[in-house]
Image (cartoon, rainbow, N blue to C red; front, side, top):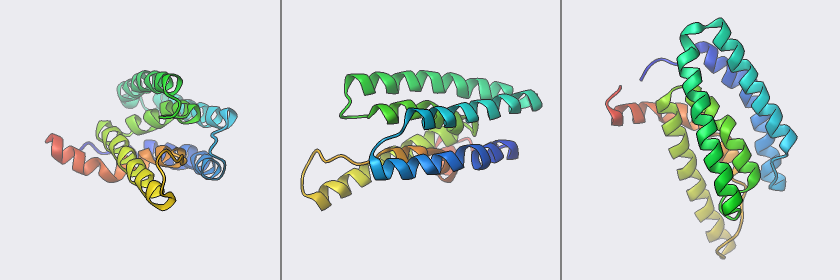
Length: 167
């Protein structure tokens, strides 16, 4: 697994984490991810990564790839949110692009591990909620799990790199 740039980790910790933590807390309490807050997080991350691309030209190809992946996966999430709102709320769908952008900018292994980790954790939490509530179809906030994806990705990236043979 290639080493992650300290500058990208700085963006993750200083630009992404504070608003993501607030959004996760708010979604956990109200089951809503307000558009303005998601837009603020997205704009801040895009701006920070754009400045980083100007300052560190060696990161540009990876950041372009991350941006393309964010657009494609974000469009897919919006399509799912529109077609099947019971599967993915629109707030979650609008949060996917910034989560993918941040995760992918940290590396392909981080993106894969983050998405797999978020899917696994969301599934486990969903099962736990159904067991506790004793009814199917109960809703729970997925936003906190989704917003944790870059951090889950950093934790799981060595396993993904090993599985892919890139370690």
